Structure formats: C-alpha cells, structure tokens
Length: 136
Image (cartoon, rainbow, N blue to C red; front, side, top):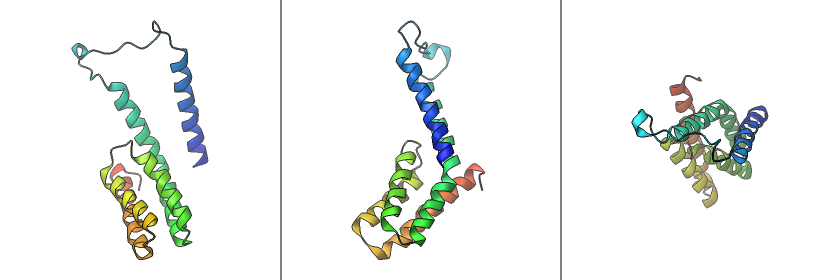
C-alpha cells in the first residue's frame, strides 16, 4: 500500500502546487452548459480517479481487516476500518460505506459477539465491489 499511497500523495501534491501558482488569467476555463459539458466535469473526473485509486488499494485493505480480525486486535481493526471508511466516503459506495459504519459502531460498542459478522459483511462488500470491477 505504501507505493500506491506515495503515488497518490505525489499526484495530490502536484494538483495543489498547480492550484497555488494559478493566476486568474491562467486558471482553467469554466465550461458552460452551452458546450454540452456538465459544469462539474472536474469533480466527476476527480471522483473517478479516487475510485480507481481505491480499487487498487482494496485488496490491501481487505487483507488488513482480515489480519486484524484474525489476530483479535480490536484497535488495529478499528484503525483499518476508519482508514478505509475515510477513503470510501468520497466514492459513493453505499453498501461498503454502510457495512464499514456498522463495523465501526460494533467496535466502539465493544460488542465482541458482533465483531465477526460485521467484519465479514465489510469483507464481503469489498469482494463484491472488486468482483463487479473485474479485479477478482
């Protein structure tokens, strides 16, 4: 995951650098509806790039969740869940978001009997997303 994160940080750094040096005359032109382009084209492109990055990282997130669960490390499971939820929330993935919220709630409530089913539901949601996307 480190290499992927490093690439993403470099990409974000580049975006931020370009944003900081733009002047009003150098700023990209806002595309109007007259040109048949949706006004939120940039947001849609950014969202699709986030989704693509997430897909690349999902197998590692799945592995981290399973490892933390197998070792019964509830703190690590909580960190993995929080980290993945932070990435997923921007990608409009309701099933995965819902299952991760449930897992996070179960971890915080310290309901030991509910951790395994909630973790399994999150892993299944990850696997379903990967399968739909052709990654597994």
